[in-house]
Image (cartoon, rainbow, N blue to C red; front, top):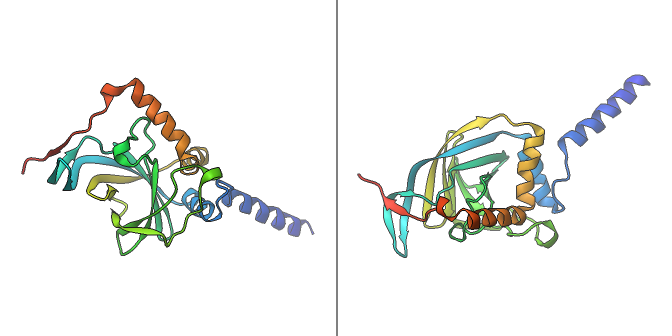
Length: 205
């Protein structure tokens, strides 16, 4: 009898540990639970991007001063989530989002899953089949090439990081309530305008 009670307690505890209510959106919540349980990678910009040219921006290998300095990558089955945690880096040029979710297309290639810009109360759920084939990302756990916009791809070097459950929950909250974090980003930019530039320059061959 005691063994049975202990087994039930263990099962309930394990279920509570690995199935959290991060989001009111059912599909998004499943994805975020997967992100919470699996590896997290920190990727650093290596001062190199590929531009196909847009407006006055050049074509070729460039240095993108607007690139995110660091990106965190979460994995779950055939999905990855790219999250930019640094304060102040969001800008209108980047699409005003703190994250993107990508669906695997081939070995290291992912295409963007379309998602809303707002938080739970005013957003529709994630549809993994609603994708943008023109915006792509490449990830192999050691490197990341992320198409933040359709016309430019930023290059990163990645390594797995260890993070506490508390830290992961705080980071996952950005996926859920990203509009609140965007407001903080813009407030910071307004107070520190000289800290940010918008130059995209060709790299010397």
